[in-house]
Image (cartoon, rainbow, N blue to C red; front, side, top):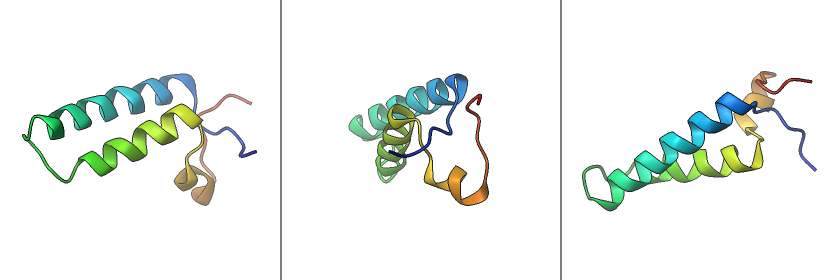
Length: 62
């Protein structure tokens, strides 16, 4: 299992931003941003960000 490195506020922000990006893409206001929205919802729900692991950053309380 992957270590958790995304905290509560970071998780909420990621999920909210992803919902907004996916909705804007569905309404055809912006088009390629849906991929970022999908990535954010996956990392937000799994509470693991590969980029955070790569740079040794984490917002999750130990």
